[in-house]
Image 1: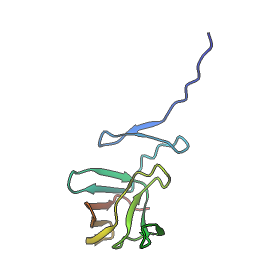
Image 2: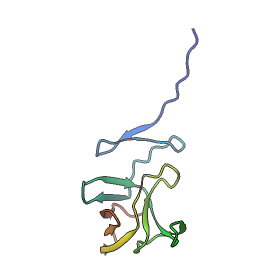
Image 3: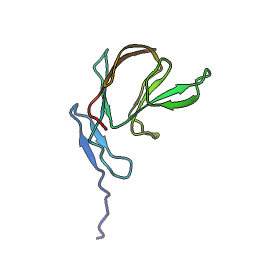
Image 4: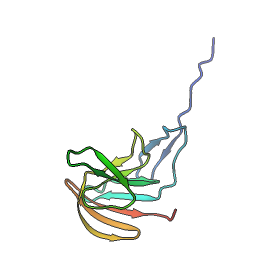
Length: 118
């Protein structure tokens, strides 16, 4: 009888009891720098990095930025086809500090915290 080789898939369990699978290169990213909370249901997402995406008038990608602004969407890492979370475009910035932003999008309200310094 021959042995069947089974690859091991690295996984981790987050504080919110979400099982995360390390897709990219088998590396588990367990250090988060950002925490996003959706107001209506408390959905919490965390990521190591974030980007703010700007869109053309027809809705296609225009540019990426390090700062939030009305009309931009938040994208949370990883930055590939398996991204963690993307919001719809910001319609209003309610409050903004160096390590915190509260903003509204077309369909949700969010709070984003920077958890640690880079």
